[in-house]
Image (cartoon, rainbow, N blue to C red):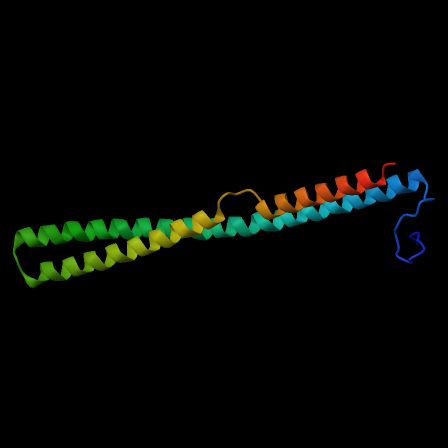
Length: 144
């Protein structure tokens, strides 16, 4: 059962709480805090990994469409050189459409990859820093 101070809040330390009990409480709280921070870091890294995967997929799709655009351009040049006919115009239209689609997919993919970077869990890092400062402040207030 957790100790209660005069205000009735469990786990609160009073001036006459033994040092061993304070150390035990601090150890338990720090362990819980570290575990929670690791869980948060794992969740953040999973989200960033998913975003990077989507971005990489879009970049790959853009590259594939770019290859198709290159193939269509080659077909257009061949048809245009073979004879100047409406077939060449149709092939050119397909080339332009594929090129636009490739540019859009590549741009979106780049944006997704950029959002996922840097790969470090920034929110967790900031939270750990804040926790460290809180602990330091509590320790410095506790020392006589």
